[in-house]
Image 1 (cartoon, rainbow, N blue to C red):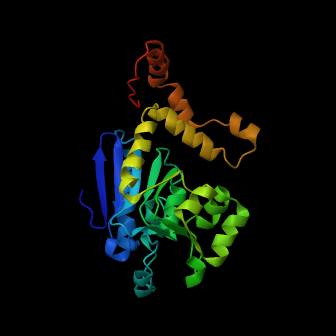
Image 2 (spheres, rainbow, N blue to C red; image 1 turned 90 degrees about the vertical axis):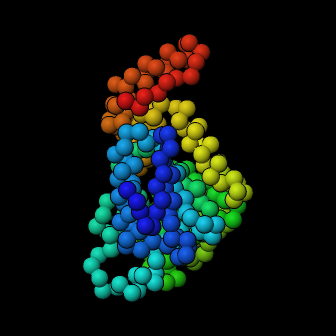
Image 3 (cartoon, rainbow, N blue to C red; image 1 turned 180 degrees about the vertical axis):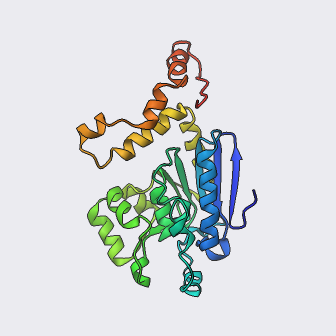
Length: 262
């Protein structure tokens, strides 16, 4: 299927999702949100897709967030698609049942909803020119697509409140220092670095990766004992998977495992 505001490429077991509105710094309007929701639905449902990389077209912006010009022009319209379609902003900030890993390759400005999409990803690789921020209060809004909740959990309350209450943004080096970013690289190495991380993840059994993500995320806010005792769907799937036998067998035979993800 062809998309107007996003590019969706599948190569091997890796899906690459590119927000494609560079003329608007990849800000998202209602049609773009609808397309991204459909893309994430497809990624989640395709058994051959194990990992996704999310990035933005061009060199200026990962995503400037919500398209405020479009929002102002359509203020009296029906609810925006991100409010009624699965997944929230960008089709992903409220997608709490996606257990396949998502890598954000942040190639420039990640403001507002753009920053919230990075926060909703599992791993963030940033170009050294990238910047992150939640400037919504400066235009009378709040970072309601999860930003006000995820940022304090990921970098600590005081640092997050400093960013959110002032609307200031930070550069990639500061984002790395605060723990918001996994790795900072020159812009021309961004995608190859994201692909390297994806390749390293694929050295692991895909169901074990999903089980790890589900257990970590679903157990995050539970007391330790409750989190350990809780049953997780993907852990049960992983325990029943042939890959659970293949891993130790490959190790004992001194060869690379042949993961099936089944």
